[in-house]
Image (spheres, rainbow, N blue to C red):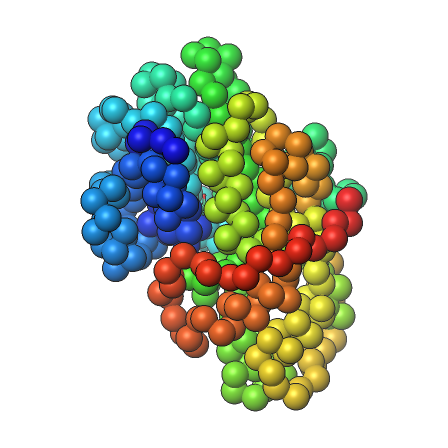
Length: 331
Ligand SMILES: NC(=O)c1ccc[n+]([C@@H]2O[C@H](COP(=O)([O-])OP(=O)(O)OC[C@H]3O[C@@H](n4cnc5c(N)ncnc54)[C@H](O)[C@@H]3O)[C@@H](O)[C@H]2O)c1
């Protein structure tokens, strides 16, 4: 148990709101630093009622604000970022928030002698992988301003480690899903799209043959990984957080048909699609963090369908899913 304070940028977003309750359980105080562009004010207010969470409604682009607010904090979790699709539509904003914002947070953390900084990196730093599963030492080939900034963030962390002894872990999240996820999320929006159709009794429509795959990881498992990274003895490295299982879009459609419980068959829209595939090598997460995924995709999707009303952006209270065995790894 800890009586320490965590500065948590972007802590009012989808994943952050699943991490904060775990931090409270472990005795931390949490200072959420979020400009509330995508944050959930109602859920933050519920957490603030514990007396151990406060919201600083500010922007990571303002280095002075970041520096001041970090005073007295022991740990930092840096999540604040704009999404991949916005980064393509508006690279200027993306670089400002995701690159300059990163630097403001990392430089302040080094200056304040923060014990551990956990950074939300992304599987998208790999670009299109040459092989599966994707290992942390594989070649990186980031393709958009968002992915480029995520990779540069990792490089900046190494710089502050060398220059000032900053202790860090960059978690490369794969395709995170679960209660509270945004309907517009770049990769996982396919889930919302299929569920919306199934709820209307319509079959999911799959582009191409549905061979493109993702490594869907439940937000509850991600939240446990973030806390493990904050507390692990070893650091200064990127670590994949995924399940190790690549689930094709066609398999996802079948899983969601079962989860919604309708009797339909997917339709295929024959056209050329780029068949990208994703699966994480999670041996490092196991070794360094003692972490492994616990929510199978079938249970996670069934839970998501059950708990998220159509069109909702609300994040339900922390998960109370039954424990399930770890899915088998493809690695
Ligand atoms: N969700 C995924 O599948 C996924 C995958 C890989 C990496 N990530 C990364 O994980 C982190 C959390 O993702 P999420 O899904 O919870 O995203 P999210 O958009 O729900 O949360 C991000 C939070 O950052 C805040 N924010 C945005 N710009 C800000 C700024 N300029 N100053 C202060 N706060 C700002 C938003 O208001 C929001 O609350 C992000 O860094 C994201 O890039 C997410």
